Image (cartoon, rainbow, N blue to C red; front, side):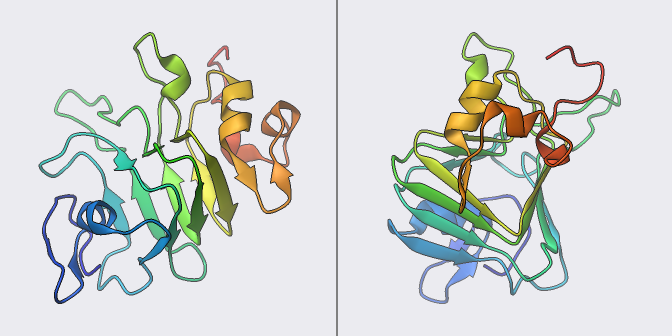
Length: 179
């Protein structure tokens, strides 16, 4: 990867391009290295040609950021009327294996407005999610049991009790949300 642009541009031969391009062209079990991004630290989804979160179809994939979680993937971008145009989720992992997120910050997922509200929030996974040295900020969780089943750490699954405790402030619903 060599750009924070949110598009599908890239060159396989030179191993350059955007995050979406890298995900689309990654093999199962690959690692996408975001640690060498030049002069940018925020990838804002929905600002390019694709107006959604990241769809990951591989069973196993690793997103690797630099030490200190200095790269942020966000869906938060205000529209003209001042509201947010954040996608319902930052990452939609459709594989049945493990999505590993290392040294990254994910910001501003929101619950889906559709009947499939359990697919909202910052990360949705049909498999397992492993977070290492990463932060999940500003995410709204509608169904903590679904979020707990979809999210895991190196120490095992996160329980609904963990989501509601001060030890995990990045996984809490915003105050006044009612959920």
